[in-house]
Amino acid sequence: MPAMKQADWHDRFRQLFAEGVKRYRAGQRNVPEFFTSTENEFLASIGCRAQELFDFVEDYTHGGDPTFETVLLVTAIRRDY
Image 1: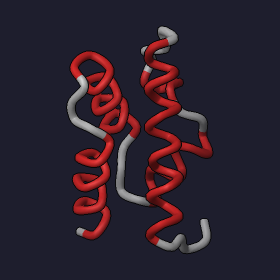
Image 2: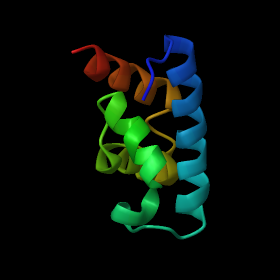
Image 3: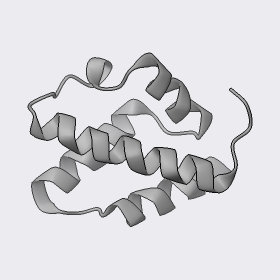
């Protein structure tokens, strides 16, 4: 996967988080099938596991926290280290 500018991965991650919320609200709960292979490749490229993003989506859907901004900050820290 080609190198991605910071704004690019932020935007793509935001879209994937929003899509995850839609999927979760639609009743999708099976983590291994929650994200496509392309989405999983993207997550791996930024140091994020599918289970991790699924957990953030699940918590957000149930209680409104963590917000996307918090999820982005946590992911950015992990990506950089």
